[in-house]
Image (cartoon, rainbow, N blue to C red; front, side):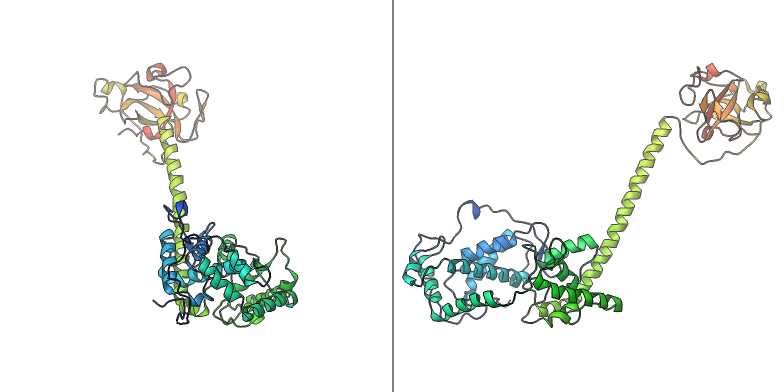
Length: 446
């Protein structure tokens, strides 16, 4: 694997020589011992996303700990220091892959340069000897002396003077307002709200606007152009690419290995090389979202079926079992005396003892079954809808009125437990009227 460090052939101080240990750069105590691995989530470009991603903070600490400040630039830092930093970082963040080394070491470089900048801000006057007397905490005295000697050169002084002048006289540059989120997490939040990934133009507008939706003066002119071009591209049905789109029209082609509105340390070359893989990933993600939607719908249907099944069980226990079965309608010609001594499970039904006027219509001869499908009597049921009230009970679905012609098990409980003052078939008696569920009224054989 190629090193991201660069050329280290330039002469640099031998930092491997014995040094004083009064200001050690090695972490000790609870900050280095027993540190538990942390979970990270990445987007398709390998940048960390999610609500909490402490990788940047940790990289800054590791850079200050493992990379000496005696080196002028990041490219001059020996690779052994990079390897130590990278291995330590991977132990704490196991999800990180070796292919992301360039991204995370680039972030470590930024943290290292900011650390050196803060050290330069503490210089007072131009007396180098006084600079060297104030050695910062966790910086070795040898590294600090080399750092001070380098910053005291005339070339570095001119660079600092020019940078200050540029800040005062230069035109303000457009800066995003994402804070520590960066473009990667901002894109993730935008997608959560809008249900799709943002284009580079949409992300630029979202990350450069203020809380009230307006733009700072140095961003306003760019925002107006991007909004206009974005509208034009949408009307034409054109898609934004790395080589075309509102961002390219306003700012020009990306240069110096950067890609606007993507994230730090993601180069144009890497974006082009991974374009096919990202397209395939987008298709897989779309299919996954579709499958998840179907699974969620199936889960809702299963929950509904569970609820209906529970309701069915409760109704069955309460004597309100619902079925769509329709019994055959037959009429009996048997007489009551013809089978008084027969087995009740096989005996044919008796001739009706009640007159049609007692039923309200001619009625249908049927057996009366218990929950266990045991014959408990014979009778004549009315047609559906002919009677709607029995013993002050409003008939529910599949409940019908029946006239009891013969009772085989007198102490059998009534449908629903109690009907009027009666609780058993004996209380109803022969010729009495009750209601029963139609599923337990099989027709009698002719």
